[in-house]
Length: 67
Image (cartoon, helix red, strand yellow):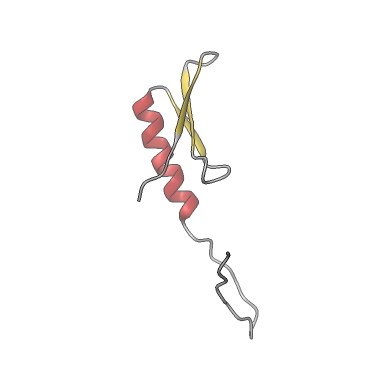
């Protein structure tokens, strides 16, 4: 699976900030471009992990289609 990421140099702390525009709040950083890319890979994997949810008895789960 491919994701677009944006790398931005932060001159104040000499690191690379990196974020994924398609995943709001999914961001990371690293001291090198390579480290930042490795860190955002991990951040994306964690972001995409489903959260365990507890449902009440009788709850229904459905999917909806947009557009």
